[in-house]
Amino acid sequence: MVFIYVLKEPDTGVVRYVGKSTNPKRRFRTHINTSGKKRNHKECWISSLLDKGLKPIMEVIDEVPEEHGKQWEVAWIAFFKESECDLVNGTLGGDGSNPSVETRKKMRQAKLGKPGPWLGKKRYPETVEKMRAGNRGKPNCWKGKTRPPETNEKISQTMKGVKPSLARKEKTTRAQNIGHARRRWNALFWNFYD
Image (cartoon, rainbow, N blue to C red; front, top):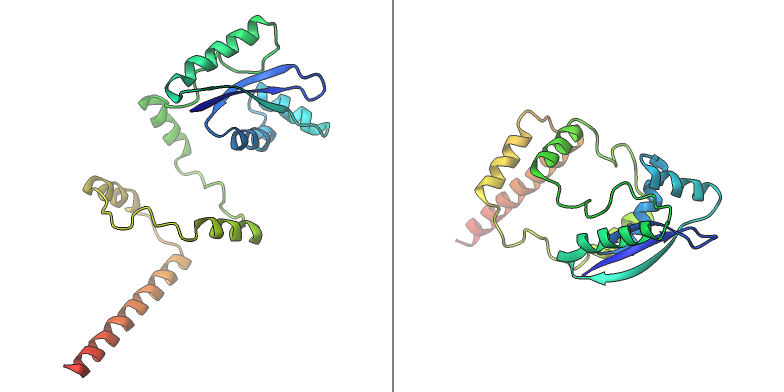
């Protein structure tokens, strides 16, 4: 299921944005966190509210099957526009997921060579502990599986010419030394008992 939601003015309750999400709480946090970038009308509106010490009010107005989410989002945007709400939606809706192959290529090209969002930043220790706690007891997604040869080839092509960092080299050397020590110990152990 997908949820159709609205963001409202906190003081008047007027609808300003219509969107869809499978996880409205997470989507609301994303709206708040990305508002500082001010890349579009919606982000500028949310940023102006935050500057006043306010936040938009999120309200889920519909729950529909995921395959019909785009059509319902378009319908709700049209409904609120006809109701003369001053929406900050940049489009008539129905977009935002499943970009075309050409668009994906353009997005990939735009990101090439740029550092990741966490480069040079550190997470708070409490956040790291929460992440660890959330992953405890969960199986590794690749446990008991092998990657398809095409995936291995893609990884290989991606890593060609990439020089590992000093920390990565040290970690790899440490792991290799531990592996060598284990193999030597096992060889000695089993030779002793043979």
